[in-house]
Length: 105
Image: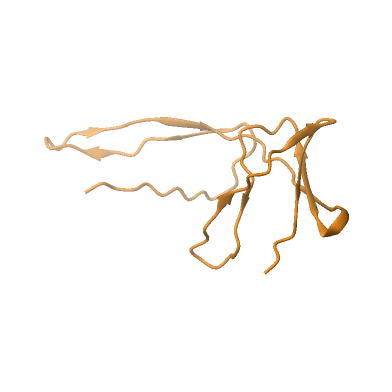
């Protein structure tokens, strides 16, 4: 049986803190072994939502926020099928910008 770890935090993790995990694992000889995984936690970028001509929506976020993906879902009823937005963000004046047409339907 493979166990899936679940992480519950009693308080929020602040930007640039490091989390580590050391779960015990029983072996066939009833010994324990441990592993350590460190995950740096960075700041979450702000997302600005604005209106554009023809009912479109403009999303902007800081140009320093790399490694993120813009996702969309047609419904927020579980299970939520998130898909990556195919519009390519444009970097201008230190901001990434994506303009989206409204979903009609």
